[in-house]
Length: 160
Image (cartoon, rainbow, N blue to C red; front, side):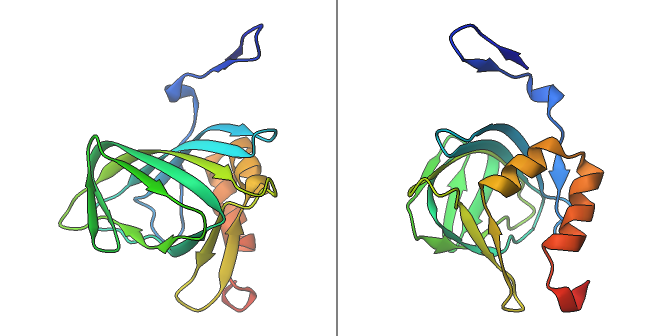
């Protein structure tokens, strides 16, 4: 990473690690930038083949540009070169089907400047906030430490 005199940042994509998720290890996230002042997070989401993410509610706006492949949320297919704008309070379940994979560039911006981004809804009724602090923590962790964090913090107490 390099910070320029005007405050801009330059990142090498290869210098950022892929973080995987316990429930869907073929899915990965690469945090590119976390901006506390703008309450914004930029990352690439890599959807593995035939994976289903948790249903989630946006407490932010999201811009999701498909770099490669095809993904789906609810009944809508989103292919390479397509942009999805996901408004505040929208709820959906992103996934891949039919063996598809996808890399999606995502920009989340907190609406109320409160650091809230996504509320993940587990199949067991448990919810977890994926907020600014979570993204900051994730960006500072090794992939192994993030897996341990998920085991300790992102699962219901009774399932630990």
